[in-house]
Image 1: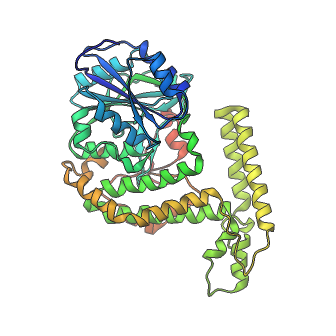
Image 2 (image 1 turned 30 degrees about the horizontal axis):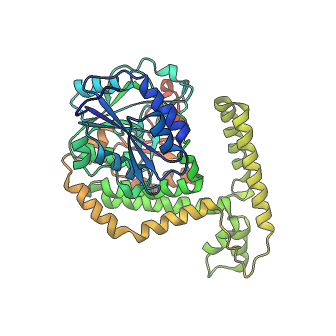
Image 3 (image 1 turned 180 degrees about the vertical axis):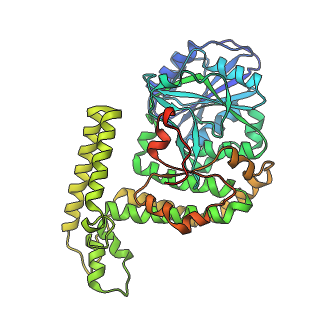
Length: 461
């Protein structure tokens, strides 16, 4: 790594208890081609308790280390690194990634040849055989999905040269440092997840562009760090942060309709998640003035229960079987078997819960953690609107490009990802609320992650 007085690039790597992964990441940087202008490496240690600091001082003494007292999350760690950076551009890299030798040179070439102040690269799985990230899709409610995730990487070999894209992935992106700071950087309140979608939307709305650079390749040990949060704590972040992203960024003309739809969708999904994972808790939601018999049927999975036999129980099993066959095709026997065991174990736990005696028709207080994470997200959102409104005013004050322009160029999607989504998204009241000025695309997860050869424009779910 060339020693220069003022580097062109500051590569910032947040890390939390990931000494082994971080070592591999930094070793790949050592083998990387050095573009003109030089570079510096900054590791933000997010309160690690492992050997991270000792390993860095022993093996990589030229790395600039920023130590945080505790795990403040990905967004805050990135910004802490930016504050110590000296480069004209800051480059964000996950600690569970390895870089291709030409990674930084490819970003440098795109930033030099295009007018864009921000670039993002291709992310492959750790083997290099599957796609992790080539394009981010904004959903109508502030969520985002990774297009073609899991597809065979060789099918994208024809993708050459940079192209405009709406979302820069925070694990593989470069942005002009002064612009990052002027736009407020990653929102530290997000902690982790969707902060890059939020920042990308703000960047485009402020009149700037992002380019995707397929030659800027990294290899990702998928969720090796974030998996330590657990699936339910991640679920809380997904839901809360997606709503924040939409609330802050959608322009005034679409605000009331889109936020209304996002809130109703979150409530609808929470209801279905509760019914799926703890059917008896629907007794809390039963009509208190209805008959006791009907209330009990709802609570115990009777004829009105969304997963009862008469309301499509067998169809649910057919859907599960179809998903299992798809999983066999894409993931092989081992992963499919582990998923099947997890489903059967949950079914057994659910049957045991249904045998528990209840008093006065009320279910036991213990909640499935997935239900708990949904309720925690609702609680956090309803408690923080004043703070969120102040953030929104700051974001909108920087707007130069209307969403009618941005979202026509990068249409948001309406994707069935949760139980009950098909019914909700097909409802006339839902469709009527979607702004006609925005060319929404409709589809399923299979459509989003599907092969480039079957890409098509959807007019209905």
